[in-house]
Length: 161
Length: 161
DNA sequence: TATGAAAGAACCTGGCC
DNA sequence: GGCCAGGTTCTTTCATA
Image 1 (cartoon, rainbow over the protein chains, first blue to last red):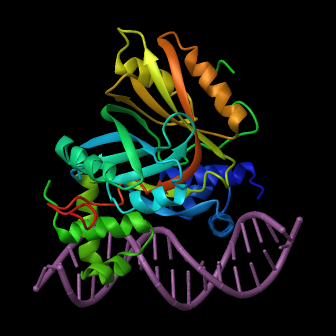
Image 2 (tube, protein in one colour; image 1 turned 60 degrees about the horizontal axis):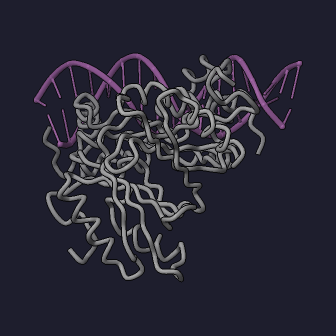
Image 3 (spheres, protein in one colour; image 1 turned 30 degrees about the horizontal axis):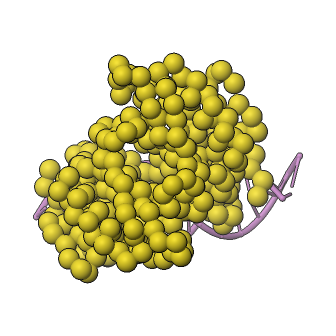
């Protein structure tokens, strides 16, 4: 799908505030409200915008601790096996198979360190898991709303570019 | 702040669909539309809900590649130094200082592997960075909308509990 | 093909109970 | 927390370039 500058600006505005009115967005990007709505509808249908979500503060909800866990699995473990197993844990916020020594990397949110420990214990007990290697998060430095930036043809990076 | 079951359900509904009407949410949780609005206003003011954001498909926008990068820094590097530096890169989606050998872990989204390489090169060239260790994501298994789950007093985890 | 304007329907918002 | 009224926003249609 082809995205022009208007589409990118609209997406940017909606990532900033998904409840902005079409009129507000239109004023910001230089379109009428109805033109904005048509583009948003099109972007949703095309799959560029997959939905609208509330941003919640993990701390305020009691998720004060997070950790990253590397998973080392048995040779014949498939990605879907891992996906199936870890998706059963609500504490697993994200998971991916990766290159390098470990087979997968999990991102875990929990209520406290004890809770992290308990979850890791259970995951380590999954039949395909050989061993795990965990890192507790000390302080979060960056946490961009998923997909806030939009790739340009060039110059995505800092000034040095 | 104290959250009851209704608050949790409302947050859950808004994480699912931030553009759901108050009436729809109310029907789902068993409240009138205005009661839902009052609670949402309160949850926003209390900081439990920090905003509303469009979910975008990184693929659809051209971000087809992601990587995790461990940062090993000079002894006297402060977290804020790292934060200041890496937040200048739009490709850095998340960053945190962690326990273990590495000092920080970055999550990077880029348009392709070449782009990932370029960004890592630049970050490695930051004055406080001693070395980096990168893992390219092969396939994403889980990607929960930030804060989709809400901690209960017990039984957050799979059946085994 | 994409835009702006307009009208009716749906929704939000605040006051009141 | 529910109900209601006034103001706003959404959604669709129509005309236009």
